[in-house]
Structures are given as C-alpha cells and as structure tokens.
Image (tube, rainbow, N blue to C red):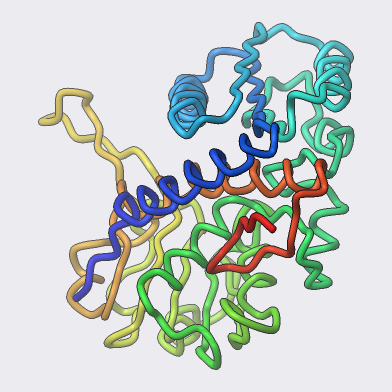
Length: 306
C-alpha cells in the first residue's frame, strides 16, 4: 500500500507558486487574495487563519475581512461589490458556512467570475463543463486531480467512481476527470447514498474518490484490491483519550481499506493541504486572467508565465 502524502505534494506545489509569484512581481503585479469570514464558526476561523498565513508566506497580497455573525446579506453583498472593484484583489473567497440570514448562492452569483477562486460561480461551472481552460476550477476537485497526477496514478482510460454528488466536490471532480487531455480521459461513474448495490459499483473502480460526508462510510467491502482511494471527507468522532476529546477521520475506514488499496490518502494530511495549495494556484490564475499575463492552464502546470 502506497500512502499518498498530501502535505508533501502541497508543499512542492506551494514552492512552485512562490516562484511564480516572484515572476509576476517582476512584471509589476502582486496577486491578491481576499478571504471573508462572517461569524465565529470555529473550523472556519482556523481555515481562514491558515489561508491568510499561507498566502502571505507565498508572497501574495492577503486581505482578511472578519464580519460579525449578525451581518446582513445586503452588507455582505456591498462588501463583495467593493472587492470586485478593488484592483489589488484578484481572488475573493467567502468562507462557508454562512449564517442563516445569508443566502449563499446569491453571494456566489454576485462575485466577479474572474475573481471566484472557489470556482462556484455558474459561469465557471459552465466553463468547466465545456472544457474551457480559463475556468477557475473548485479547489478540492483540482487538488484530487493533482494528487493523482503527482502520484503517477494513471487517469486516462481508468474507471473512476466518485461517491458523492455535491457541487463542492462530486460533480466538479467528475467533470474534471472526464475532460479530454492530460489529467482527464477517465470513464467516470457518480454514485451517492441512494445508489443501489453501492459496494458492487465501487468495487469496479480503479480510482475511488469519496466525498459523501459520513465518517468511515467506505469499508473494505467497497474497494477492489489494488485500487487508488482518495478520501475527501473530514469528520470529528469522539475520542475521550485525546486531549481535544475527538479525532479526525475521513469518509473511508482507513485501517481496513488500506489493507486492500494500492494507494490511499490519509485524513488528515491528504486532500486537505491540497485544497489550500489549489486556492493559491487559482489566485495566480485569476491574476493572470485579469492582467493579461495568462496562458491556458493545464493540470500539471496550472499557472504559466508567458
């Protein structure tokens, strides 16, 4: 069994990003990322802090905007409009989840699609479906693809089974891996919690990508011997012996599935670090799209200086 080390791969990609930021700065351009946090959701606070820290470490201009949980939708949309018009900001991320008084799809639709580094705006989703290389692709699906590429897992011609159909991971990763060209050309099946005979479907997979949001849902019976397993899930389960009182696990029962898998990502330390690395790469791509310093991205070279 080969353990796919997302931390190590993300570190290499971040180093590439640092070099490309320096190249952009020689053109007189500093890529800028604004992250907006509404409220005090504990996990969101940690995510936003990490994104802000890493973007600064890589040389990006970073702006962290923290708003109270009582912020109205109108006030948030005004802020989004200001960031859309700010030439220092090339990428905007509004951290989820948002408080109940705010309609998240409305916020996403009001983002400038060229600054939508989460890749959730309908224009970017449509571009991804069409195979348009200027699409800003959601960070976690893009991170899954890069993990496979960097680990030399054959994608072309492989049967990929995706468990989960959300717009966050399941649908975009399916579109990404079935597109023509490097990093694509897979045969993709999308399954979910209501799929009949799920173990029979997942056992057909050369590559199994799991994003169903249920702790340790995928067991050994779901996995074909030698398959590559990408576990996108992250869940807290009680563990009184731990100082925090819980431990983090994925959507895959790691210990038993690792006995059968040819390669597998751990949780934590697998997909998670890749998501932030792809956010930084998306910010570079967004900067190039807005400044004209852009050539079409590819999975193995997502940001190219002409």
